[in-house]
Image 1 (cartoon, one colour):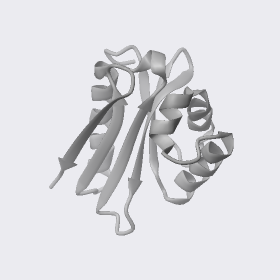
Image 2: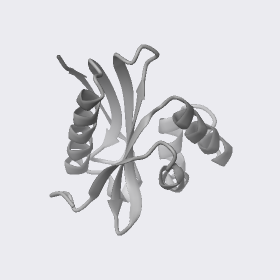
Image 3: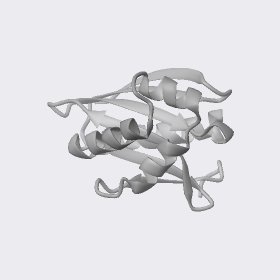
Image 4: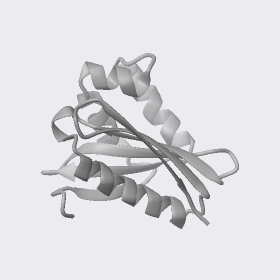
Length: 137
């Protein structure tokens, strides 16, 4: 546990179930903002399969044993930069959690040799979109 009260951890590539369940719990507006197109349960299924095939890094924030927020880091084809998306269930959106998740994402990106990480996420007040670019090296 960190100061946010969440246990933040990296999921192994094959362990996408928690992330999938978290995405299915998003309310309609958050799904619309996150997926932009096709936000039904089948779109969540397809999205999680795509994450597995793209060698994405998924970091989850757990409260009481359930993932309530996640950040997906998807490296580009050459593995030098990545795009990351942060999403939290409505009742769990906060600036403190967003900062903790982004810090963990930057640490993981550095560990994996990524030179740049572009992060977009919903944080703080519900549906507030935040962007951040981190360059390493």
